Image (cartoon, rainbow, N blue to C red; front, side, top):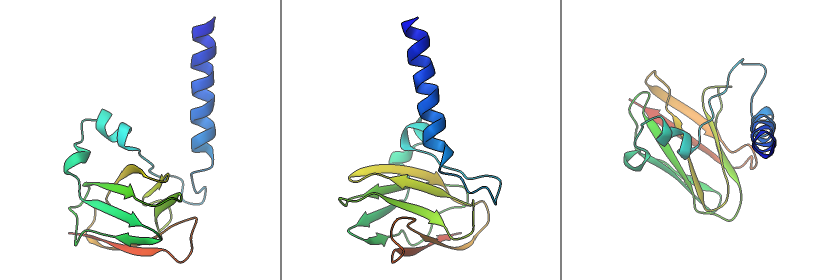
Length: 127
């Protein structure tokens, strides 16, 4: 019985946590954490990294199409890296924590922002 309760609680928390993350107008939002990426066999340690320091993004010059991009939040506030184009990529990272997402499959420049702080903007260049 205890096992069933624990499994049910974990399922409920997963559904609750992901329920508010999507944008229903686009039909899909890709949200991945480092643990999910590593579980899928991707090496997040070698991934290009977007660093968040205070309320500013520091981005790599460019990333490869479909490459895993790590996000390191070095600040004391929760932030996100969310594409301006709805549903393309989004990851929320707690203070002093890391996350990751997969870069778009098409080359180009992709504007992004923080859903919590409207003054935070950046660009991901995919080659």
